[in-house]
Length: 376
Ligand SMILES: Cc1cc2nc3c(=O)[nH]c(=O)nc-3n(C[C@H](O)[C@H](O)[C@H](O)COP(=O)(O)OP(=O)(O)OC[C@H]3O[C@@H](n4cnc5c(N)ncnc54)[C@H](O)[C@@H]3O)c2cc1C
Image: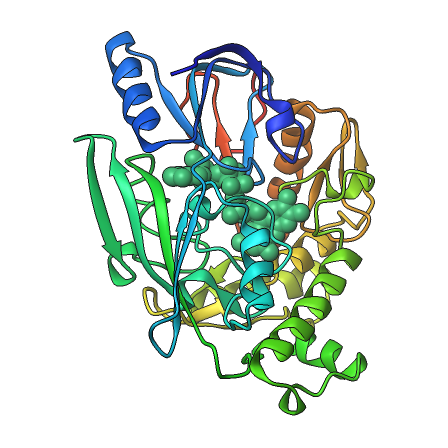
């Protein structure tokens, strides 16, 4: 097992933020994961698991512990049934997988095109976009239990998926290391389009899905999704400074009906207009009560942080109000902006925004999702 020392974390993240990790091990084989965990336990060193680094905010002071970068590779495809089953190693590039499945005529991942990161992270926050979530097609997750060093398997239900959430992000945070994920994809049906903006854009592009077979329809959807994402700087492009982000920085808040009414009343008294409304759409996932999902991007803009707002070494993306962009490569600058947005939105709407990216302290602890306070 090769252990690298004092490795800069910034280049391993899309935000380009993070001081040095005391130790880093790149795990290309499962045995390396076991070996590294045992070594860290003997040395009493905290361990943080990293994939593609597209949803991670490291500290400027780095990480005084061991970073395990999961780089397991390989895809087993079973086409013996009506649906295709793919058992994919955690270190496979996510968008590469999406592209391959579509090229092979499979349907079910097309709306998730262009999302950066690795396969192993997709169940952690139940990655989703444009009306699809990985939980729609995920069959099982294979993982190593860090407390017992045993291999465990979770079926879809056991993962407790919800909106950008799962047991791996909630009650079992940091307990499991995902090694493989199995997805089941359609082969003979066309993609289902649930997201109005995508349906509209397909129409604008002149795509008639019902005239195409499943695979070609999925390919057409992928093209349109990538176009939409590029227009919002939501596809990582090293030549575009707006993509030096972690995608959406805040989650869309979900409110009960009573909370929603209160928020609208507060907004009306803030604007002085009794007819002011707050856009919302129904949120219903199988694991939580249905509620009102509010577009966080709208809240951020109405609170005064329009696209392009600059704040010392950080900015609101020119092309999407939810993406916070690092200009200086300093966590403190990004957090200063995030904290200011969070406080202002709370003042105006009474809603406390939750951060989506995982914030890792120097000691290796993962900080609560509403803690954006800058501290060195
Ligand atoms: C431009 C841009 C656009 C984005 N758009 C979207 C979007 O549309 N939808 C969306 O849902 N997300 C989006 N994201 C966020 C991000 O790409 C996803 O959350 C992605 O799944 C993160 O993968 P990663 O491998 O980079 O994870 P990392 O950032 O490396 O890790 C994220 C979390 O997962 C954990 N983790 C990673 N790998 C493993 C493993 N093998 N086992 C256990 N835990 C693990 C880490 O410990 C950490 O807690 C976007 C990000 C960017 C930069």
